[in-house]
Amino acid sequence: MAKKKGTIPTYGTAVRRGIQYYRTRITDADGKRVDLYAESCEELYQKEQEARRQVEDAIFRRENPTVAEYCEKWLLMQSAKVSPGTIRGYSTSIRNYIIKPLGEMYLSDVTADDIRLAMIPLATKSAGVYSTVNMLLKCVFYSAERNQLLDYNPCVGISAKGGKASKKREALTDKQVDVLLDTVKGLPPYTFIMLALYSGLRREEILGLQWDCVFLDVPTPYLSVRRAWRTEHNKPVITTTLKTKAARRDIPIPKCLADRLREVKKKSISEYVIADGVGEPLSASQFQRMWKYVTVRSTKPHTYYKYVNGQCIKRTVTPTPGGHQKNHPDLVYAIDFDVTPHQLRHTYITNLLYAGVDPKTVQYLAGHENSKTTMDIYAQVKYNKPEELVGVVNTAFHQRMGVSEPPF
Image 1 (cartoon, rainbow, N blue to C red):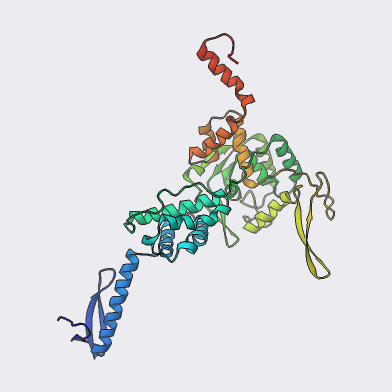
Image 2 (cartoon, helix red, strand yellow):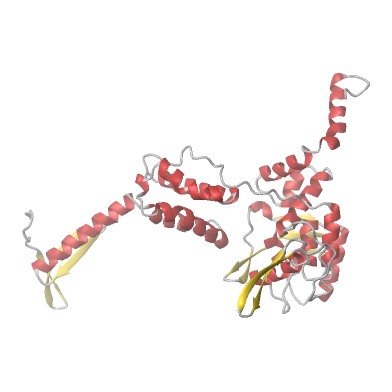
């Protein structure tokens, strides 16, 4: 029956549990037929109008989501492919740098200028943060474009370069490695540092390493990377999901590391190589406390707070190299260089390249999925030492020119 605007139509009836109701049907946002019931035509008419408004709104929002709505959907889709830790990182970046400036805008209304304005605050952040947010923006908008939610992708032409250039971490020198190992020998982080320096494992690979993947009683001792460590609410979680497929590898280890692991295994009460006092894998805070054994022995300025006459006073102390901490005479300030867990791995990779190991082999040992990562390090190692390359260059051009003496 045709319905005139402003008039209440005549509806059919249906009996439910002995009671007669007026009934009509509408099509919901998913294309399904839905029954609506009411005790009077007037009430049913109001229900029908409200339901149609909701359907129209749902269809509109589906076809025209806000940036915040689509970001949430994109994160949900990614959760099936990446680790929870990665999703948490993505969520934080998206919430702070995408949803905050753009979240209330309809996805289809966002312009390239809006993107550029949203990225202005990132100019004060590190190049790594800028790159991550840039990547997330492009992933979200390219996904929306593929799903035909956009006629034009506003991320086209947005530069991937920006943010503050961070200081590149240099590999430790042999002298620095000796100082570091001598300083922490006998302390909790010693085994962790040995593993990072002489097997190149990532932090999460070391903390997830179990003795069933350590092979010491074979002609060539080696480690198998099969597990990774992460934390949820400070609690350790060990998983067989590695960072990349390339992270699954078998790494031969030098004698110094094999000997150290034999010593540790004799005293171990845990299935984990690095464990807490009761044999469990470390929590995030436990690892931070373990690494503090390194940082407190640094000659960098130390800041601490002290209460004087009820006031909290900030004080900074610059240790003297070779000096001792006042309240702990056994603690010597010996580390006069920066060192991070990842820098130990970088030192391992650099040392392999310095030793002449070909980049493809280094890529396997490091567990790099992308050869560009290895080659970037290779370029830094091999192409910035002219005095070490002059012999190679002389030989190469000597052969091509066919002369008896090098051209240089």
